[in-house]
Length: 97
Length: 489
Image (cartoon, rainbow over all chains, first blue to last red; front, side, top):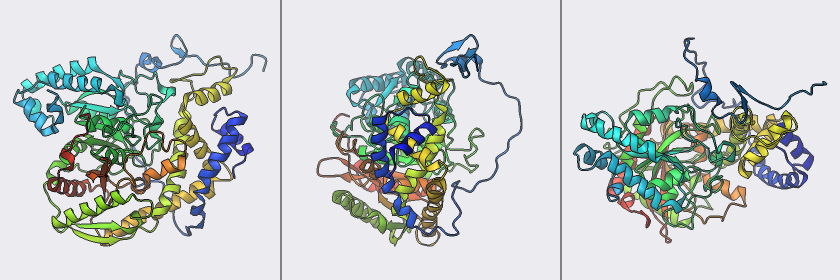
């Protein structure tokens, strides 16, 4: 069972605003989904390496070559709010902090 | 002219090179068909202007005889709206990206253009490719061309419906847990998920990076082979793409199946599998046997663990990948935020639909401190067991594995929308293939009593798409399923 409190904690980690009603619905829905994952707990995974890559992982390096970057106007094309060449965001700290 | 749209790519290319039709006429016919079948809702955006320009350029190239070098010259193609196309909207079917204009082309888009294809529009899909019915799209559900009361499957439902209804002969989809093979099956067309690493993911909106792969939809196996050849190859911009020679997939279609050992996994013929689907698959296996293939019973004992494993790993990767949608640099931003955190939280709650938020929550939970080992780490270990099952079957018992692509035919719109778990079960036969990183194809193999299509799934060894094409083409040649058209086509 995933409690409403856990839902609110996870929602905060995921940066999703969730009101009380939605938290209760998530608590029910996620609990049902996680019930289906219980069967994984019975599997013997002793000595099994976790699979992180399909074809085995190896580091991929490339030459450090200077290449043209995307033009600034293209980057700004999709900005929700801007000021000249800059993307505008809300205040992170209050002036009085 | 719309008659030409029912032909395969080779026939279209011949007609173009022979001057029987121009690329402009073909592309106009495709755009007219898309317009006349608007109610299917297969497209999120249509690029008429660019398409007509590209078609005129293709005609100039055809005049110069470039048709021999460019396998898709003048061919209209649809691209899933998960894949960036410079200068046009790429929304991932989400409100959060509903106004996002791609500032660059994905590598697969570049490859399509280099092959001469004309992109006519961006196909509808489940939001961020999360869904099995194409009902989670911010732009509305897609309808199945065989029965418009039914879903086309998902997540690449628009790409599948557009090809099934012959609006275009080819389209691109993406497949993270079955999102190409399941809609191909439900729409009665061919769809292949290449081996993980075969096709570049650069410029493709990320869902679950260790599982995502781009692949084609086509009306015939040979058309799918042509497009797979165009898309494949190492891309320096995607470190997971693999340096491996791209074989001639079209030639592989002529190999036949004499002596081919086809593994039949007993774990895929279980309770819950629709009886009519099972019969069609068994009949298809008999056809392949008559062609000279040997049917071998195999066992993939960890199959039933694939679904819970996937629904830990994919949401975990998604919660991380989708953290980038924060309202800062692009996409939707909530109005009048009180502060930065308020902006993040409201932007994301407003911008993402229910299923996407649900998967982000699952992912954040399984990655959170205290649950990581019990869920995420354990799922990665079980994933290794699932991959090992396939490896062992391929090492000594069989060359290819055959099973259904989907446990049922197309279901009614709305039928499963309220029950996430029954929706998740739609991908029970396709998910193991993504977890193991293998190639898989769905080929039409019949219809149920309601006239809805059924798909045979063939699963291959890593980077052995050739055998999939050989077996699929042999089956296609012996049957006429891929020649049948839905009522709207």
